[in-house]
View 1 (cartoon, one colour):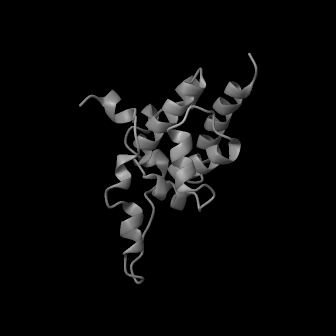
View 2 (cartoon, helix red, strand yellow):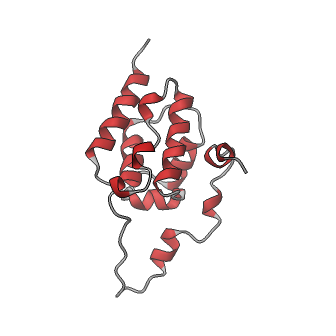
View 3 (cartoon, helix red, strand yellow):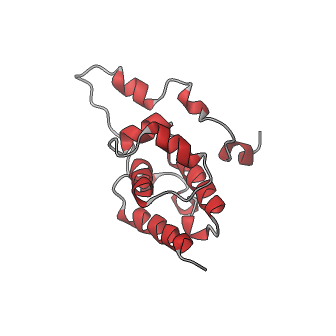
Length: 137
């Protein structure tokens, strides 16, 4: 299977069918501590992470979001909902990430928070790219 086929999903998020991180969290005994992965900067390949500033169209931006999601942890839509504190529902993540429209600001911030945590630099990168696509040419 090619890398492109993995990074460019054409259907529903297949990770929803498997037992995911959220399922494991919900089935964890209360006396066990569950922690999110460390800092995004510590992930292997941090310097090669998908860069939203290279997107020249809405399609490029959405593809970059999907690639970033895979790079950051390949979370399911339900896990994204949990990681953003419920600000965006799993169904909305599915609709936007598999859609064709540029996401709204609140969705973008929920996505970046779910994937990158509280990394202000990552937020700035995504917002700058998003604003650039919203400006009329």
